[in-house]
Length: 222
Figure (cartoon, rainbow, N blue to C red):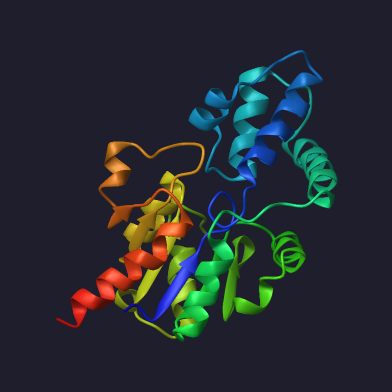
């Protein structure tokens, strides 16, 4: 059994991708553009806000700077977050399972701390986490391995003793580069074949992770 499980936040632990999609629809709609779910999943899903905004401004020739766009996006997101962000199915049950089995629980998110903590507290799951790593704490974001290596450091565990749960291609690449086993649980965008190979397995939902852990633990005792 692994000694620590590291969770991504957006699209993995919380159902926030649909909110992100709606935000970009709101922004583009003000300038007469539209965005389908398929387009969002293909071009924007799983990337940082900075990367996405740079691409959106360039692709749609929007009349504002990156800083202005990010401030505008942050304001819209706050309005959506006030309405609440749902946990993904199986999230709370998995956290309870890990706690009961004395497996360390960490969060590794590109998000800002205040945003992430607000969501975790609202959903009453913040107390499950032994430690957390947020985007500003590392020099390089995903797909670089820095955030997961930092999570291992905070857990006090070697990479071999940790497991990452991720939904995005960038997250899979980051965990793989860090030398940490990673389970892929896709959200809006299924990973490409190159990235699927980086995962120890793909599962349809967090609801399936407990069964995977029980199975691998029983095999290790044989």
